[in-house]
Every structure is written in C-alpha cells, then in structure tokens.
Amino acid sequence: MREKKEKQEETTQLVLFKLGEEEFGVNILQVKEIEKLDQGITRVPRAPHFVEGIINLRGDIIPIVDLRKRFGLTLPSIGYDSRVMIVEVGEALVGMLVDAVVEVLRIPVSSIEPPPPITAGVNSYYLSGIAKIDERLIVLLNLERALSAEEAKELAEAELG
Image 1 (cartoon, helix red, strand yellow):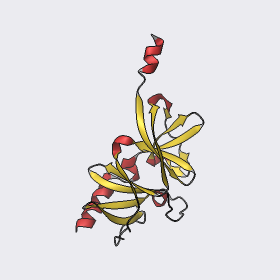
Image 2 (cartoon, one colour):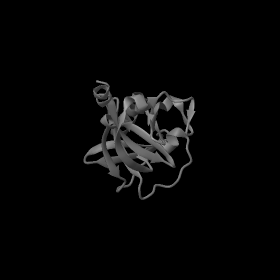
Image 3 (cartoon, one colour):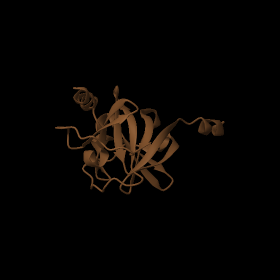
Image 4 (cartoon, helix red, strand yellow):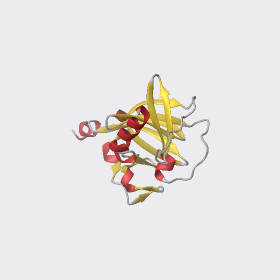
C-alpha cells in the first residue's frame, strides 16, 4: 500500500534555465516555446530598463525582458547559448532572455520549499519556491511577479501604438 502512495505522488514539470551560474525553473505550462536569438531586438523608446525591446516572431510582436536586468544581476553579453523563452504572463506573450535553457524536468511537488527572503541575489518577491533535487537547488520563478500582467499589457500596447 505504501508503495502505491509514493508512486502517485503529485509532480510538476519545469523548464530549467541558467542566469550566470544559478539554475532557475518555471512551470512548463507557462512556456510556449524556446527560441535561439537569431534576429536582432528592436529597441522600444521609453521602455523600462529591463526591457531589451521587441522581436517579430512569425508575425507576432513579442516584448523581450532581460531577466538579469530585471533581477539586478551582473550583465554578461548575449552568448551562443542564450535563448528567449516565450512565456505566457496573464494574457500576454513575453520573451524572457536567459543565458541557457538546461533541461525539462519532472519533480515531486514535495521537493519544493518556500523561498527564503533572499536567494541567489534575486529578491524573494519574484520567487515561488526552491526545489531540492539531489544536490541541486533550483530557484523557481513566479512569472506573474517577474513581469506583472499590467507591465506586459503596457508593453503590448506600446508596441501596437
């Protein structure tokens, strides 16, 4: 009986990515696609400091947010492994610029703990938890707080107007 309960433990699937040497994760249900940054980013006047600009992705205009800038982390240049994760925040699609996408991982919900006040240089306001997998600690982001629905809506309106 006990074995059956363990097998039925609730799990969640995450997309893991890197910012510097730290691993972060977001719920896979929010990630629509992952793109290599093959095209240039068009700057948007008077955009918040963490917004790199916009891209045209198969006819859709997508704002690009640099997560390093958003979290106040040190800024390296965009590298070969850099990717844009197209995520859904509220009803808007937003591109999140990250250093590398590492893997997709299914983890037990029980391995996720609430975030401490300060984690990996990122204010806990942006975090939904910390996942402990073997020896790894993965910082889980709350995308709604990383870019609020209001900010995403403002970006979408700025692009169209």
